[in-house]
Length: 408
Image 1 (cartoon, one colour):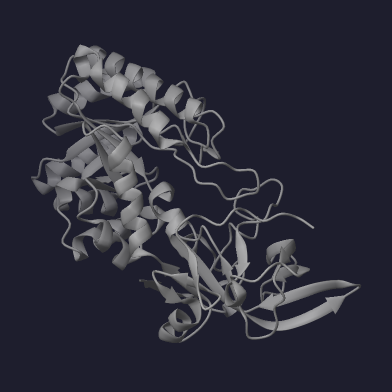
Image 2 (image 1 turned 180 degrees about the vertical axis):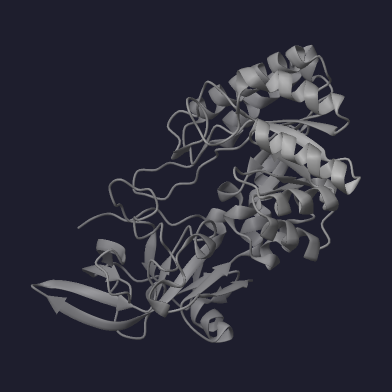
């Protein structure tokens, strides 16, 4: 038997069945018209933003990183709740435009931006977080050709990283950002050539569950930003401090004590260096906002025993939930939070392997999980599916197609 991750708070049962947003899983699947389905909770999304507002100093804004979950209904729901949006493609830019989001609230990061993407961002009035000298120079040239002043920030590759993070995006050689020592000269060039200077973006890593590591990284980010600002000799308009706040997925993971992080930030904000006294500060969060608000529902289509091992074969799989299968950067596969949604209140009664419908041994949703007895037709729920689920999985693999998505 292998343990499964802890089910996030905010989910309960109706008539013994998993309920999401006050509605039974079977009713939600019926409304979607099919399985598999991703279901996202408005209440949990709103509750996470309220939790952040309760603990993060008012001085620090909250941005939503759309790459975590770009479903239009999710972004639209978050629009009045957050201060800004971080995008990573022209497609995400078009999404913000379709929802009528003020481009002044949008910043565009990511290496390898194509000229047409730079042009679209400049024309829209979004801020470009430039990740190299070449990209900055292309941005300036395109702005001149369009006769439009680009809004430009520089993404910094710092000499430090977010310790213990699942994905390190700073420190040492990286495709992300400009090495810190090269930033001041490039920033001065941007200002001299007449662009609208929008400050710095310093993102060090993601999916950290250590308050100490996050506080240490934030301290280093503020110190580095102040130093760079002094070296530039120009007021730092804005500082995107990155994020990195993780959520518990696996057995043994503990949720972040946001109060501890907020108290440390409050102390730092109260004693900012002169270079940052008037700087707009923000955190960039995606997974922390959306991750626990989503559930992936799939249906058992077969139950079989092979060499004494029971398999529940579902119509879902890694083509929708790549991360839960263990194929999204995990070195040792561990079980996500998983439950039998149809019998959510029942006691565990058997040990099973839960697998998907794909013709590959990689398609595993839970190994040796102790769950209530389930049979063909029952629904399986995979939790922590609100971020990097549908949009980060190979939905075209083997031709099964995408899952349904709905916000309730």
